[in-house]
Structures are given as C-alpha cells and as structure tokens.
Image 1 (cartoon, rainbow, N blue to C red):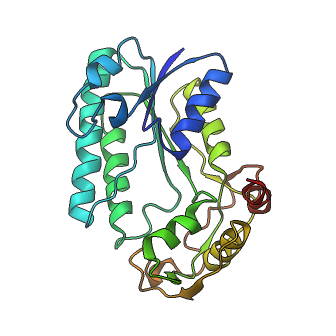
Image 2: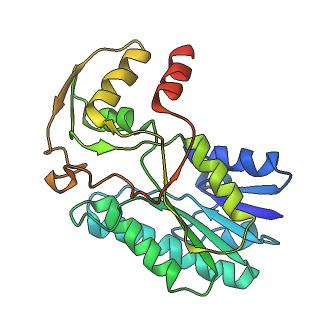
Image 3: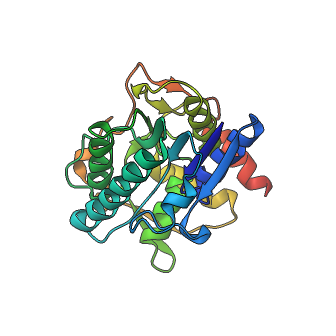
Length: 250
C-alpha cells in the first residue's frame, strides 16, 4: 500500500512513517520541509500521486480561534480536493479526545472544524481521537516558561505514548474506513503539573511550577475528569513511567 503521512516530519508523523514501513508499506512524507504546503495546496497534487490512503497528523498553532480555524480549514479543504483528484480511498485523521467539550480553546476549535469538514466531505474516513502525548507536559512548560518559572493548568489527563498512537494509525490506515473510531488513551490518569515536574527531573532540570488555570492552554472548564477518555476507550500499553525511564536514559 502507498500511504501519505501529512505532517510526516513531526513527533507522531515520523513514528507513523516508521510503523507503516515496518509493516511493508510505502510511506510518503508530506511536509513543508519536503516542498508541500497543505494550507496553500502547493505541491500537494504531486505528493498524492498513486496514494491510496492519507494519514493526517497536521497540527497548526494560531494566535486565536479564528486564525487556527482558518489554518485547519484551508489544509483540510485542499487535502480533500487533492485526494478526490488522486482517487484516495481512505483519509485517517488524528484528533483529540474531548475535542468537542471545550469552547474556549483555540486549538480545539481548529480541530473541530477539521473533523467537521472531513466527516461531510467526499472521501471515506476514520477519525482517531487520542489523549495528550507523554511529551505534552514539557511542551506546556516550553510555552509558559519565564526564566526559572512555568505556569501549568492543574488538569487531569490520561497521556499516551506517541509511538503507540503511531502504531494504531498505521493499523487503521490498512483497514476499512470506520467513521469515528474508538478513542485511544494511555494506561493511567496523571496530573499535568506532576507530569511536568517528573519530566524535568528526568532531564536533569528543576524549575518552579505554578498551577493555574490562567495559562491560555486550558480553562477551569477542563477541571475534574473532562479531559479523560470514557470507559470504552482503547488503552495503549506504554505507561508514563515507561516513557520517563526512556527519557532519563537518553
């Protein structure tokens, strides 16, 4: 099978490319660094030549919800048009568990539009929602860090290994379109602030972490179990402790 991974140079994109190739498939890396811009459509038609399946792990960060929706919307519309021309038979989209629960998060607004356009479009699809990656706490620290302090929302998440997500995406890609697939999550709930503290410790760093809902990442609407998957979720094998041990060994 010839599959195109949109965003194939990112964290989960690279791992998805590897998973597809290990399974004996041809994986085409589609990314701006490879001369393809999905928001403008530049290079997209050539990149999708002879492609049967698209695995879409695109990720955009805009300054507000309107900008973010515009980026995700342009990319999805261009992809669907190019896929129709190329006779792509399956579009697999990576999305986020709970993406429809939060109105104030700009990134989630873009992902919701992405899902809506795909589900109403001409290409058979699978939407695979997953929880936050194990790397997420460190990412939030990088967004909010000022000197030796960083502010994080005290949100409860159930993080999943990016490699486990990639393996599931590769598995879904070779199967039939499912519409909305069963949510994917890691084995255990974790507190984001504690995740950040433990990740920094594993990397030999120590800074002051300030729990606050005023970070712009999640608001108080994410308190409690709002970011957790339901009981029907598919549980991936890699624990946060497993991932931390690997980080500490680097």
